[in-house]
Length: 258
Length: 333
Ligand SMILES: Nc1ncnc2c1ncn2[C@@H]1O[C@H](COP(=O)(O)OP(=O)(O)OP(=O)(O)O)[C@@H](O)[C@H]1O
Ligand SMILES: [Mg+2]
Image 1 (cartoon, rainbow over the protein chains, first blue to last red):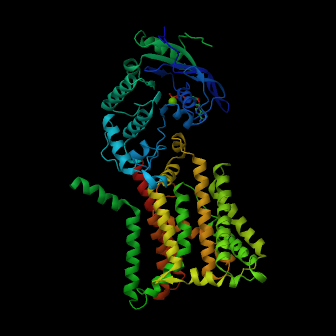
Image 2 (tube, rainbow over the protein chains, first blue to last red):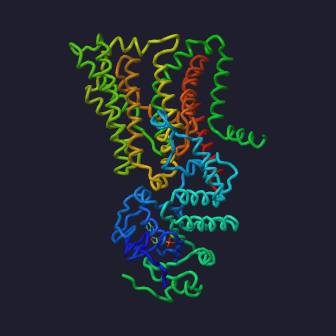
Image 3 (spheres, helix red, strand yellow):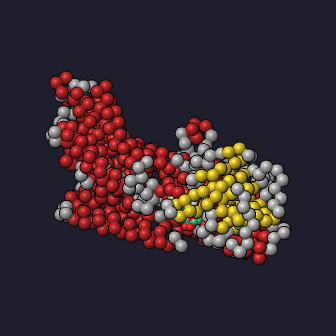
């Protein structure tokens, strides 16, 4: 069924995560290979965002194993994940609304001036701005002004900036948690184009979406999460909408992987 | 061309520093017109600046704290505590516990002691806020009482009165080319603070933490460490302010700083820094410090009963916060 040939780039095994009495993940597993687009789908509250947070170092799973290139890793902070080349566009965006788009793009990776001034901590705002403008242009993010706080942009523009930030810095895996939820038709197509371009560069893309046509259009594989566990895996070319809906609602159970 | 200019004008008009700066200018013009003989004079300017310099140093630190969406109620008490420690160290190092004749070496040790004492309180505040995750309001309310109590315990409640003469003459009353040294020091602190906040990575991250702490954390910014450094920094500045106050008043003025915290917060907020964090400028804070200072001086010179001064300041303050709210609401969709 699933066409994974080599050792997956990123593999999660039996992740469990509880918030108080709520079990968000009940032994969830996940695999993705380099240069692959995997759609992660599931009903509201299935645990998709929680899984993403565990795999980007924002939350620590209570138990389970995360492997990169087959080696176990501990993602105990967002920085740890970033150092492994993992970037994420979160569902709640996680941007600083009072900072401008360039500052948000470079958040946590601010460029400093060369020489003594840089050693003193001075920012190279001009270079960051120029590079940000280039990245936004390349990724099709259209903003009227680069000088306004991101909180004053439209919801879709903010989302585009958050997606751009994750894509620009990702070298191995990028998680996009509902990246098109607030986007118009044109912007949505652009994001799908960006996903394909990133995939062609050899980066693994995890797309979370409730939009099935979109998922079928761009994904190579589809993994289905239900009540905190993976219940099915499909190759996108072979699956039907009925099968996906069946897997999400529990009408169809395919998988028992330990 | 027009496209380039309009946003700039809008930005200027949208910036609360513009309006509050206008208020300051209008006040100065008004008092100058009312008393052209007494208000616009070098002497008035000098005393006004000197009297504002201690508050300015506190307010620069407070700007950073409020931009992180925090608050520090303890600055006045920390100022007193640091002043007491500085004074006690200088006395202890002097023969007969009388520091009046102490030399430069002892004064510098006293300064160091005051800075360390201030930073230590700031560090404690920062640790409790960033590590124990207690609300800044509660933590600094606690150290507001504790630092003052510690100062009183250290001195048995009696002000230290022997302050080195060279400190009083050099810093307290000294001037070079008509510029009082107190003012020069406060200006230096302000410039450094402005540089740090607006041009460095530390400043950028201060805004980021205040704007969305969780986003900052996910972007790999060490949020706890940053908060600890900000609170330690404001403690350090309170220590410096304590030493400046010692030089100016020649005594520890233990009972005289109970409203410094509120004055500093009011100045910062007047200057357009948002209590919700993420927005603010050091330049605005400078204006925010001088509006009450000019009002106070002006009322005295013009002969308005001085009880009007807090009423007037409160009015401006509430207007400034209201303006901030309107601005935020219009922006947040
Ligand atoms: N921080 C949290 N505190 C408490 N419960 C949480 C928290 N985060 C998630 N949960 C719970 O975990 C479960 C899974 O949530 P999650 O956000 O992962 O779902 P999701 O699949 O992303 O849903 P959606 O499609 O609506 O985004 C939900 O029941 C949710 O209430
Ligand atoms: Mg979600």
